Amino acid sequence: MKNTTILTIALLTALTISAQTKKKKLPPPPPPKIEYIPQIQEVETVTEPALPVIDASPMRIAESTNNRFSNNKILTEYDFVTGDQFKPLEKIPLDKNAIIIYDYDGTVRSFNLETQKINWNFKAKDEAVTYSRNKFTLEDGVLYIPFINGEMYALNHKTGEKFWELKAGLKNSEYIKIWINQIPTINNNLIYITSQYENSNIYAFDKRTGYSVWNYKLQYPYNHIPVLYTNDKVFTQNAPYIYSFDANTGELLNRRNFNIAMYTTPVSDGKLVFVANERNTVYALNPNTLETVWEVELAERAIGTKIFTKGDKLYLATNNTFYALDTKSGKTIWQTKATEEGQAAIEQLEEFNNRIYAYNKKGTLFQLDLNTGKILQTINLKSKPISNIEVLDDSTLYYYCEAGLIKLTLATQTEDLIYMRNAINENARENYIKLVR
Image (cartoon, rainbow, N blue to C red):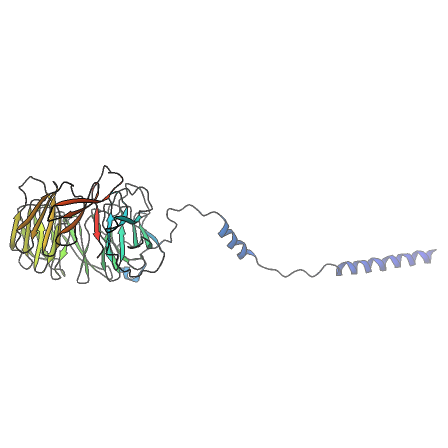
C-alpha cells in the first residue's frame, strides 16, 4: 500500500511537470513590435476637422533675401500677406475686340465691342467689396487687379481665369480699405503698390507668382496715389514726404519732407521726376537726390492725377486751366483756360495722337491740340462721365457713365449706350475702363 502511494505520487508529479512543460510550448512567440504612431497621426491629421482660419491659403511673409532693407519685417494682422498660385503665368494673345471695365460696384468685366456682349465677370472673394476705388494694369494679356480690401489677382484677360491671388492684411471688413486709387506699377518681374491706414506699406510683388519680394513701412497712412518707376528706382508720395527706393532691393535711398501734402501723381521724362503739392506748386526733382531742380507756382490748384510727360514737355491741368511746361526749366509754353474760376473743375486728362481729351465736373468734354493748347472741340455731354476716357481713334472714344458704357462719335457728337447696367447704384463713381490693344 505504501509502495502504491509513492508510485502514485511520482506518477502525478511526472504528469504535472510534463503538463507544465507542454503548457510553456503552446503560446506562439510574441509578434515583432511595429510602430504605428506615424500612421495614426497621419490619418488623424487628414480626417479631423480643420481649425478655423481667416485665410486658408499658405501664409507668405516677404522672406526674400532682397527684403533685408525693410523696416517692417515682422508683419502684423494688418499687413501680413497670404495667397496662392493656380497656374504658371503666361503671355496671352490680345483680344482686340474687348474693353475691360472695372465697374463702380467692384465688378471687373470684359465686354466685346463687336457683339456687345459680356465675355466674363469677376469679383473679389469678400462680399463687402461693393465698389472699385482702384484701377488695373494690362501687360502681355494679363490683368493685375487690386481691390480695396487688399485682394489682388493676376487674370487671363480673355477668360477671367486666375493665375494667382494674394491678400494683403488679415483684417478684413468694409471699413478696412487697404488699396485706394491704386494702379499696379510694373517693371520687369516686379509689381509696386502702396497701401493705406494701419497697413501703410509700399510692396513689391513678383508678378509671376504674387509672392512678396520686399516691403517698407511708410510714415503716414494716406497713400492714394500710384507709384512711379524710372531709372531702377521707385518713387512714392506719402502725405508731405516723397520717398525713393531701389526698385530691386527696396533699399530706402532718399526721403524728403515738403511740409505740405504731395497729393499728385509723380511722373518722369526719364531725366527728372515731376510732382506737385496739393496747392499750386510744381516741382522738378533730381531722381538721385530728390533735390529741387526747379519749382513753379501756378495760378490754381488741384492737379491730382491730371499730369503726364511727352517729349520735353510736362502737361497738366488745374481746376480750370490746361498747361504745357518745359521740362528743363519749368517755363510755361502755353496755357489754356477752359472754364472760369469757380465753375465746374476739370476732372480727367488723357492724351492720344497729339490731342488732349478732358472733361469737367459738369460733363463738358474738351479736345485740345497738344502742341498749341488750342481747344479744337467742346461737347456738352448728355451722359456725365464717371471714368477715364479711352480714345479708339480720331473719331471715336469711350467713357463710362452711371448707366453704363458710352461710345461717343466726335464728328456727330452722338452718344450711344452700348452696355447698359442692370441698375444704377447710389454711389456711382470712380470707374476705370481700358481698351485691349
